[in-house]
Structure formats: C-alpha cells, structure tokens
Image (cartoon, rainbow, N blue to C red):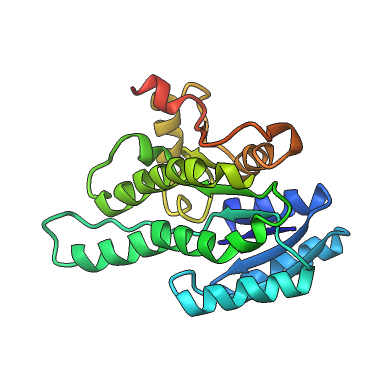
Length: 245
C-alpha cells in the first residue's frame, strides 16, 4: 500500500499511476480536490485500486488524520512517497523573501518530516517500510533567486541521509530522488523555445525528462530488489549535473 503526496499532477500523478499499474493500492493525496478526483478515476478506469484524500501537507493535524484514515481504509501502509512541492522566485533582498522562505520550506521540507513521523508507526510494522523523498537537482547546486527552494531541497537530501541511519534498524529504508528538468506543471510556464535551448546547451540527452521517467526511478527504490539501498540519492536529470559540475 503506497501513499503519494502531490499526486494530482506531474511526477506525483505519474508515480500514482505506475504504482497502481504494478499492483499497489494507492492513496492519492493532494491539495487539489479536482486533481485528486481525476487521478483516482483514471487509475480505477485502468483497473487499479486507488482512493483519494484532499489535504494541505502544511497542516500537522490533518496530516495525522489522513494517514490514520488511509491505514484504516487499506489495513496498513508500506510505502511513503513525499512528492508534494512548490517553487517560488524570491530574491534575498526582496520584500516577499521571508514569506516565501516560510512557505517553501514548510511545503518542500517540513512536510516530509511531518509525513514520515505520522507514517512511521505503520511503516515499521512489517519490517520492510519504504520512504522515498523527492528533492531536485537544486539539492546539488544552486540557482539565482531560488534560495528558499534550493535550501529546502538540500534539506530533503539531509533528511533522507539522517533518517536512513536512524531508521535502518527498524527495517525502514529512506532514499531520495533528484529530478532535473522535467515536463511538469512547475516547468509548464517556460516557453518551448527556452526549454529546447536549455536542453541543447546543458543536458547531455538534449531534452527535458518526462514525469514517468522519474516515477520509474521512484518505483525502483521500493522494489524488493532494492532492499539494501538505503540513504541513496538517485539523480534523474539526463546528465545535467555531471555536465555542469
């Protein structure tokens, strides 16, 4: 049984679909009620098993409530995919920096720790729980005016490594995926010409990635064959970080 946050679109949607295709029962969660309903309908029409929950990952009480409801509905919880995230352009000298800092770190980092704390009692039960935290290639570098996002994603890698050590003796693995330039709602506002120019110059594969390619990387970290992978950071970026190191 898998819980995927931010599952109404992009990488989260692709992950929910892929997990369901592989036979997992999926809790589709997102802040968008319309998006949750749509993804649940898609999965069910394809023959999968999915139930949706609408909630804001910044809400501690609602987080606990939703995890408890998911466990009650499905009888357990085996996999947590912390995918929910936002980005905001906020220069350090700008008036909106502090508000952006608080919101971006809450959604992209604090919520992941919050979900793990709520899910952990259930993930420990069978001695083979799996946690995959979604970060970004921004966790491996930096970019102008994206300070809060970059710091949050660095924090996700740190959270992954720390909890891989802390939770290993409970049989729970904690790993991280760092997507690069992916075609999602977050990158949709970028003009196609700009996408193509960026990919030609900075990505060895000369293209943006697809959400399904990230989903397959996420799936690979929760399979039985990955039982000895713990604390890893899997980069899915077409070679971007290597070329630009």
